[in-house]
Picture 1 (cartoon, rainbow, N blue to C red):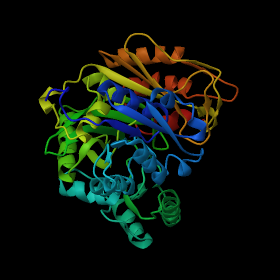
Picture 2 (picture 1 turned 135 degrees about the vertical axis):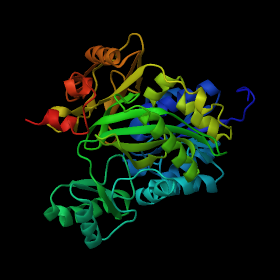
Picture 3 (picture 1 turned 180 degrees about the vertical axis):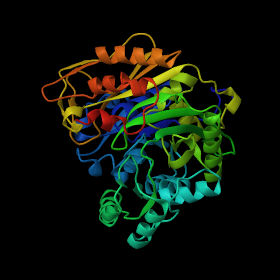
Picture 4 (picture 1 turned 90 degrees about the horizontal axis):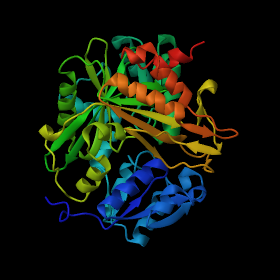
Length: 455
């Protein structure tokens, strides 16, 4: 279909903040779509507010009274005449209730339907659905369990195990247990944490792989039976299940494994009736076996690395699909060129347990040069608020080969300058990870960051 004649929204409300809100606004402008930025009081002069066509203040700093305030966001959408809402990532992006409320009001949510989001957002239900679709699962339960049944299951599959909240995401609501004597206490603790964070105390148990890699697959689906994958991303460098460095393609995979994982993700997406951009997350064991973990029903923080190697604008594709357009790509059209790396520059202090360091940024000089991309909403004079995620920027590089991409990223990190009285960033620590022999040799696992921090 000719892009000039295909259906598209007239106005999109962006229900988020920070770099992802600005990223969505830019994609909309390129498509000729008007934008509405909603914002909290401290974000009233943010980059996306200045960039968008309209803005609406929806509440004070507290997320629960602003970016998680579904009623205020929907009222803003109705008042401004927005025909769609893009939720970005985090906040309400994976809330089935918010998706259903949008549907009830005749507003399109850029993402999968509420029913699909609900099934895949519940990790236990998602495991059952993917098991039926033929995806490999780690040993464990397919249903939420009580403490006695869970302890018996843990004993059968063998320690270490991981206890996971059925709801939620973002690396929260998980607890690894190595000692059987501590299982009952940690089970109760994880239930309480899940109830506090997500309002849902259900948990399940599965085998924990302590020396695994984390590999995910990006999919696009149009809801008409068409689905493709856009390759895999390695997200193994993590701290407390929070990703720090991502790259594509995943290095040192056994021959044919990337294609096999991609096919599994597409099969799972079609089985779930998925619509839009989504990510299937897998754990990769040392023996080359891979196991389904979960589905992220939204755009990912690390989507730029996929864009860099495919040349496909994922946010644009989200908007096209949500507006009712079919995929204009087939699997054979997807060509991956070179290697892309992303480092998350956070306002955190790695020397102090990665504690957030909000405060005034006095100097902000992003990296530049060939094949370097910086997604950010930050500038000199910006005050990092204490209320939200500490992400300042996503530094992304591309090169023909992995060793060249690492060298380029190290150079870019060396010139990325952020200063302030109290603000510290993860930049120097990320350079240390990149220069580690285990990362350079692609022999690292999810334990690498903890190993580097160990005295």
